[in-house]
Length: 252
Image (cartoon, rainbow, N blue to C red; front, side, top):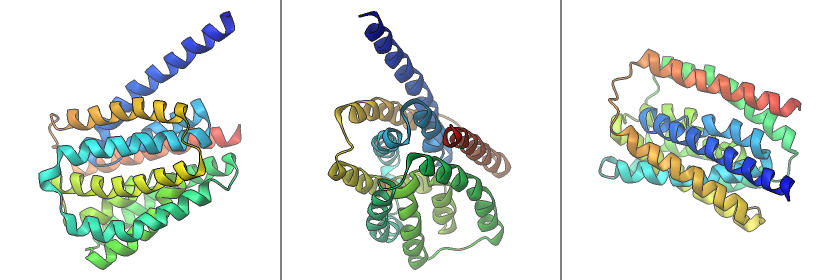
């Protein structure tokens, strides 16, 4: 009996730690528009392994984006959301099917490499000051959608897409969240069809997602006067930390 009791206590402690981390991640995502998944995914992978961590994070991401959509509903720009999401949804389904057919260590390695590669890509897009049109958003939605299905955390790529269209503040936060919600929901449906959304995955995702959702609302109370330089440094730091954590997991 003692081993079982100790195991149950350990599970509760792990979930409590993840809940606190998810609350912080929700605030981060609510303030800068991205970062929640990057903060949580390495910890989930270390605790549960990538095959469980990614579906859990998908559940949490859906709930977290619901929170941001509700918080900024009146500011959402629906034209870019639709243009981005229509090609992004089938692409996310394709990416999710790809994820389920490759080894877990490959998933970890791809996640780490993707996060590192995102740093110069974001800065390149910023220097070019690309001005996005609706058809640009459709093309970007297809590419980011596939990556969302494959590696889940693609917020740093969607940030320059929506800001390049001219969205800022609440309009950016709400519109990016609405499009992400549609992409994550399609990925979640793929996981459901594949039979990987068991009771444990759903319960863990619901607890973590509730914390992310609460963080999204707390973020509205935070003064969003973050300078561009601090914003860039914050996102890059999150990317580096996430990449290091996943690289360690891939080498285990």
